[in-house]
Length: 401
Image 1 (tube, rainbow, N blue to C red):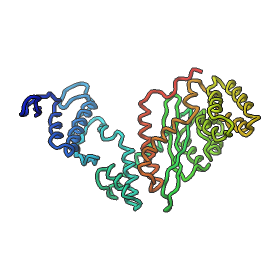
Image 2 (cartoon, one colour):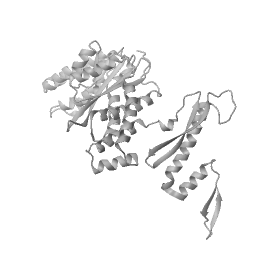
Image 3 (cartoon, one colour):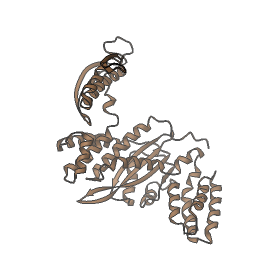
């Protein structure tokens, strides 16, 4: 490629030769000549080349190459138009024979974005939009959205997400549960709907997202139905359940997992402690006392430190002492499990982080037009996260004690 530049001591342009990868010079010229207007075409060319390279990797051979390593054959291209933020891109999707292939560039990280677009589009089409919602929709999609496009996207997305939500489960030694609330329009009124999430850690130490459900509250019946659905899909082998003290959850656990120990989230217990401190008790001191209990090397030492803490506050603040005696033991079940596992299973912080990721996507919508829309977006986010987890190393080490 020849690029025109200005010399330092000359009044006229000079020609500078720059060595660039094959085909890249044309893309660079396109961006130089057309600027942002050429972005869509440049990305289109790059994606087309990337998809051809990926097909060759899957086939184990370059085009027309004779090799014993070949796993299939190229079978032409199929046109596909993709709407993006930089405009429509007209792609040539490589096809194959003898081996299954679909370019990962058209799949990776798209579920939650599709679900988010659908959620905002539904608001737009159902007449609950504002100027801000319209701007968000155009920013996400880069083009106007029709009701037919929304319907087609919903149908394709629903099948994929439903299949994942209803997939068979297996053995999970640890079950972590949590809930968060989102604003949803139900029967013309905006209400808070609870989003229930279940995370499991298997015998191999790997974590996975087991399920998600949307309901109008955290009442016992909703938790019970959610837990029953996990069991119906094959969940078994649970040895410990970790959660906050959600309303209705404890009663549901008594019904569906009556023989499984319950671990009350230590992080939430520490926060609850601050709500029960009288003015004459320093927060730092009480929190340090409770941390010592939770960080004890074994159950007997934790119980000893808890008794000392109860005795310490019994005279001056008997209500605090009563609360400690009644609630803190619910956070000590973890001491009956391997020391190498305790840090991960003593709180449901892992599920809390999932909830923060969901919130990062849902705040764009603000108010969902219906429960199905919320479930769709949450499922898409969790499904993508679960896919990433399957490629990571074990979440828990092998048990040694």
